[in-house]
Length: 271
Figure 1: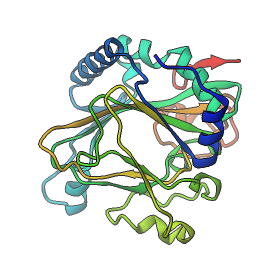
Figure 2 (figure 1 turned 90 degrees about the horizontal axis):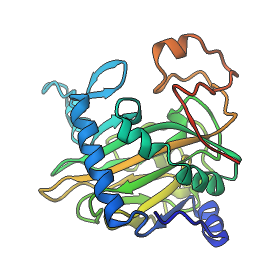
Figure 3 (figure 1 turned 90 degrees about the vertical axis):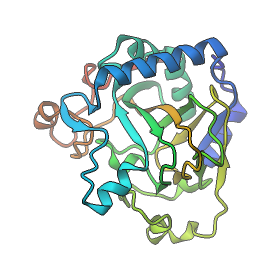
Figure 4 (figure 1 turned 30 degrees about the vertical axis):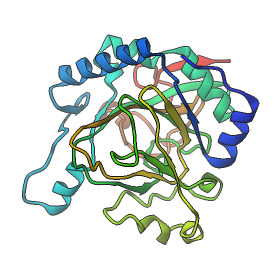
């Protein structure tokens, strides 16, 4: 694993809101990740998130919006909670340390992992922000995105609006069908040139949760698979949004409480 982070990379990440690391995983590590993700997904039998009876493909064939969004990507959340191999991968302290350095905080907790699979001919992922969906509000929160297949301009690689993380807020514009919807919230970025980030399988990117980003459609007959994980700084506090929290956890929290339940949001690195 290419886990060393330079001062220059930290500066670039903090300036632009994203960072590409080529060949993050060795060939052996990539194969291990791919097999582990495939097995963990199969074990879930279509359940999107543990403890909630939500299927990955919820398309009812009638509702136009549901049909559209079901063809953006398949999403399997918190595989670490239901598969020991994924737990081993997600709990890697080296990744936690990288996150800590890039984000500028002392302790890294997992918010949630997720496998993201763009099926053949999938719709684009519209411009959006991550952090406004989450149960804490911290400008330093970030995610890793690891390509399990080559991510290309043809099959839906990521795009970023560089520097947007400095001016966006915790207001949630959502993820709509219209690619330009987010610019009604942030018109100052409507003329900013986006940066596409194709990457070979085994490479990864990190991005701040307040960086405007999206992905193109999959214009090919093969899937584009990625394994991702969102992280929060240790010490983050509950903001009242349930997001991926279990019903029991949500019911027992009040605004301002620390999100320090290791069974829900484990700490994987502490300085």
